[in-house]
Length: 266
Ligand SMILES: [Mn+2]
Image (cartoon, rainbow, N blue to C red; front, side, top):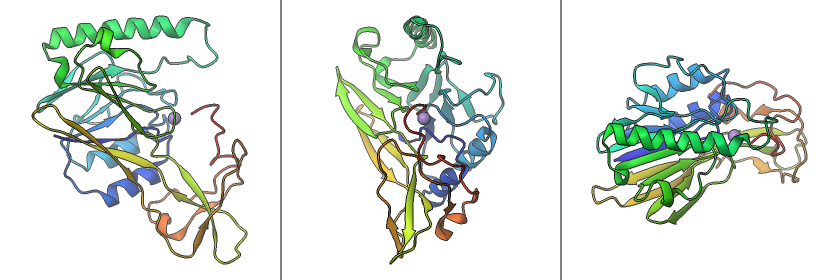
């Protein structure tokens, strides 16, 4: 089975349209472990629906959509429930709504309850952990204790692609699709423009349980532009998408600091 895994979209519909334009309909499932973005979720899921395969998602810290929100019959919130597609079953838990700035000590308790709920859902669905994909917005730790033999854990939140193995489980941070690269015109343009230059993952699961995770980048090989180094933790001025990216829409002037959210709210 082939899974398209995307995380951390942050209301950026243009980056989803760009992904749509560079991939064909060759996926069996789409997995989105959070940060779709409350305001543009319906548009984003409508673009993803054109891949014509089931979409499984959970909420991240950017998502305040009601749990009952209807994004089409093939789009499934898998918070504390199991949805099976072919040989694989998808489950997981959403980021705790309103957690940021919330109660001290509340997070551990929320996660513990969610994990118990997921264990129950897996048991009730009667699916093997070796065929399960567990989605959470931030990385779940020590899954080998509660979910021995789990096939795959998909997460995002920390905007860095990463794949690792622990206790027979593959852990994949598939973020972030929303990544704006500041560029300027060669040879000495001064005004900043932006390229949607995020990443996503294509995951192949073989019948024998072998998992291969491939990181793919949104196209950024445009001539005539120079990438501007991003000083760490500094906000960039607003700007437009470069003309090559404007065909994907959303060519607004990004508000001050839009491109550099400092890491405070990944
Ligand atoms: Mn995020």
